[in-house]
Length: 315
Length: 315
Image (tube, rainbow over all chains, first blue to last red; front, side, top):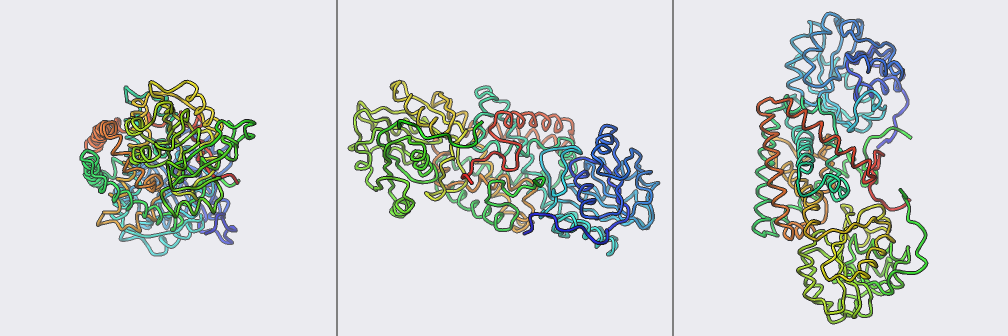
């Protein structure tokens, strides 16, 4: 498995790439698109004046604007990198500028809701190919991005029934150019898979960190001091962007509530085993989960090495 | 904060150190004790013939035996490095060999239960100083240990009412020599603090990995493939030693059940916020938890660096 980005493409996938939202993901895409020659020119669109100023300073885009319709004009690819809850409004705002034949994609952690929000605003002749790169860190903003964020990570495409084959192929080539492995599935299945591999873990992490902070008998400084016992593994993901995650839970409600129900049911079984001293049940459960970890390491989505295979800026 | 062990002590803290149980913790102690000159000689005691053979091959102890009473004879320090549930039986077995004036300690993740199990077996003139190094990895066995495991980690001492001051000072000097920061508290408070910073996180991690494995609609290979979305952070601790953790939960039952109750209550509040589209409640909760993460990084129990500050063998 390559641990570095390869040589840049000889021919860019897109002529003019417009990125809407220059946070962790958007600014990482700008960096890797330029580095790997994924697009001839890059337009950065962001509603925040502060973000625009920073993106200009960083020099990671060819054009920086706050006007979505203006920014997407002439772009043959537009990628929405905004919180899931903002996709509908952004699609509506950029509609007047969309060029026929353009590909519109996104990076949202929820797919059915994004399709429902965005599709109605897209004019005929504009191709919608929803996408979700399963990659991230607990940092936010244009300074947090880096070109190798997507390297060796999965990007899931959830084409809609009328996604044009050629448009899907281009989005796939774009993500492969960014170093990702690409998989396709339906939006509904995506939302179920991610509910368990990402949304539920985040909710639980957010929850336990809150529970710990509220204790009367144990101080917050004790919690922090002795976090090496396991707690700190949760704090990393509980430090993720609050707006992004609020939207994820509200927009993938059904699948998240289903997974939460199962999680709670299983937790009660373990709780009962503790209460009734059922050591065998605990031992059996704990032995089984070890094997799953092994699978993750074998698949290269994590390593046994000290940096745990997490994406990081190159040295 | 030093990231390497300093020079070895000019004068060892103990003359003869007996370690009972040569797993991850015991074998790490053997390595750091020799490296830092914490004891003049090291006796390794283990009930498993396989472990004894491996410890002999590794050459990390001066004497290797399966007989606890024989092994502790003449030792001025004995440290129990066995699962919490085995401490009573080990204390009973080694009793005939204990030398008056010796210090007995342990490394258990639960303290009140260890005190109850061990204290009754200790002859007069033997000093008991329970200890818990808050450090570990998800690997087990004598090969998993390394000398820097305890470097910059906390070691909590929970002296019993009749722990001799000099004995406590020696155990403190031993752990400081291993690179740890030492803190003292009561066994009861320790068990409460660790219930939230370590035991509850492990239980939840074990639980979610089990929940994910049981889904009918999402395959295990999908869970593994897309684990980078948050799930893998849980799998690391859900790969910890099953015997050790079974014992922890059975022996810290009261505090764990109390924390579990609070955790479940808080989780229901988040679940309800999702069900009723209360975005503000979610946003407020998620913002608060970010600050706690910052505290952990500031305190040096984790770093923002790619290896997340986890203990690792030296390069």
